[in-house]
Image 1: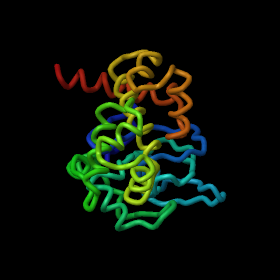
Image 2: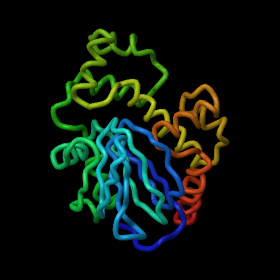
Image 3: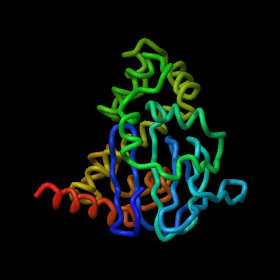
Image 4: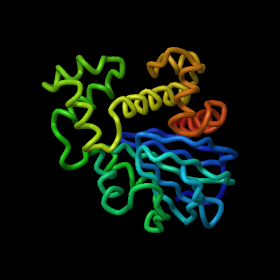
Length: 237
């Protein structure tokens, strides 16, 4: 885990995304990914669940589709882990549903997540894996055509995704779109350009889904995205 507060950072890799920086406010939201929140500037990080309970610990894990919000903090390191990658298998095996205190992850770094993020989870139906690969490559394909391509009905494909991933396939597709939009923002695109790159109708549509999936708005995330791009450019010189 990075020590000390610095410029906010946002990164997207195979099977994961991460944010490190301050959180002034976070709306209630649910996302199609595991979230691992690690305390950075303080000894603990706090998350409120939908029932009003506050969970606090050196690290917390939130299962996919669990409604929650992050408490304000000076700095947090948070990972969003795709439920269909191999690293998600470790989270599924070691954490209870809902929001769980997980001190075993308090030293988690991007170096730990990256290898398993790029590998598929065990036991995934090959047809679901093929459908997800197609969605990751082009999130605009209708579900009906995607299901036909892998030899399933749309209803069967939806049920398979819900059972094996724990999230609706449409929600996972929105998460992939948001990842593409975030990459475009980090490359210097405007909100309108990033919305189109992600497959959203316009920047209002992107803003609405970013808040729905992460509890944050583009204005909150932009400093981290642009700061990460500047740091990468400096390292390349």
